[in-house]
Image: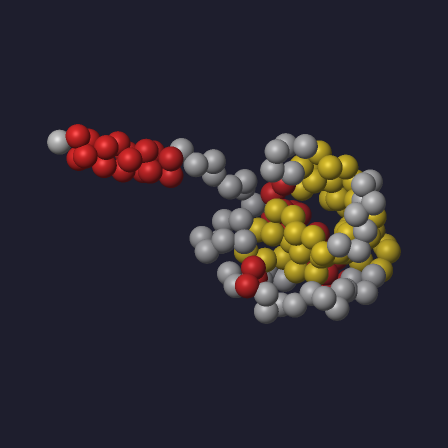
Amino acid sequence: MNGFMRWIGAFRRRICSRAAAVPTSPRNLEWEVILCAAIRDNVLVALRYRNASGRDVGFQYFGPSAVYYGNERLEKVMVSGDIFFHPDDVVGKLSTFEVARIVELRPTEITFQPDRRFDRTFPKYRHGFIC
């Protein structure tokens, strides 16, 4: 009986932890439209982002390459591209952001060349592109 009770307890914890999981942030269609326009026109965007721990990482200039679905249920939307200016001097790095965590987004008139390292066949893009 003791082993059975441990199994029930483990099962209950597993089910309850799934139900209590933090839901993904809601989609922000306005940001998606701005990012897709920036990709189409090859212009940088100025964005401010709040990371997973809630810390505001400040303004940075970002050259978006793709807006895509980040999970199989198509709930999480991500953007990949290059950082051109960052307060912590992380420049030239291919980066990915969750669109719903963007706090502020402004298109600029600064054009850029998309990074040649960007590869649409990477496994992280397997759930599909928005643009």
